[in-house]
Structures are given as C-alpha cells and as structure tokens.
Length: 52
Image (cartoon, one colour):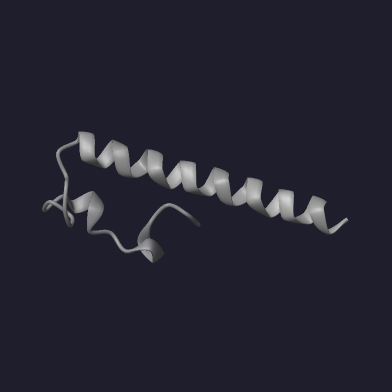
C-alpha cells in the first residue's frame, strides 16, 4: 500500500512539474526571459487570476 501512495504522489507531482515547465517555455518564446517583461498579464497577482 505505501508504494501505491508514493507512486500516486510522484505521478501527480510530475504532471504538475510538466505543466509549470510548459507555461515557462511558452512565456520565454513570447520574449519574456527575466521578470515580467512589462507584460500586464505577467503582473496579475494569483488572487486576481482566473483560478477561481
């Protein structure tokens, strides 16, 4: 049983990592390499984002 729980957590963390990596690569392709690049979309705080 502990091995199954470990595999579930490892899998979910791997998917989270891939999703975040994909977003970073997308922002870098848009020309934002460091900071927010004066992009208003990058300056929105997480509480104001569409995650609700």
